[in-house]
Image 1 (tube, rainbow, N blue to C red):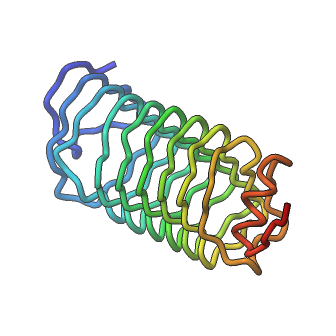
Image 2: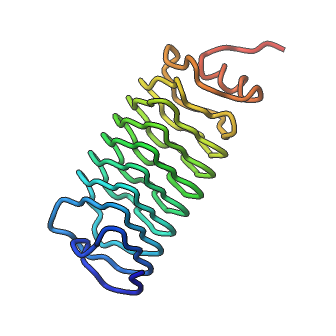
Image 3: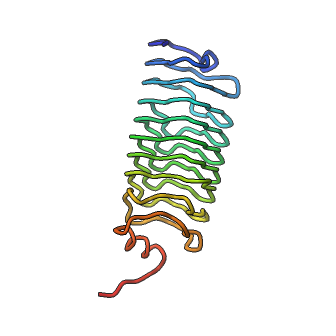
Length: 196
């Protein structure tokens, strides 16, 4: 474990854990494998075109950062501040975001495969034109105002999450998984009116 150091992102080595470290900018395209970042800070805000394989982020912040056109494989974000972060045009496979705040994040035009958000706030996040492969689980998440416009909801499990309103394309909601108590709110998204 490397602890309490000031380092450049260029100095990060695979199969290492960095705790309470501060990272300055990298001059290269970023690619990391089997790295854990715990309670670390980052000066860099543009991580576009980066690759993260088997990485773990715990108790760090990426507020309003840019990860556009990046890849994440078997990566975990735990107790993370991701509000306003741009994950557009990403590829995610086996990624977990748990106990985190991801309000206003942008996942538009991304490919998400076998990933999950657990106990995470996703208020007004964007998943426009996102391709969900296999399954995307949103367990116990706050999801008011999430925008799924032009995204097929097949394989999306919202059954334990909370929402009053979502933005969806009605023709693309087939095979979305919801709980019986969510049926009324979901029907309202589709323009169904109820009469007492």
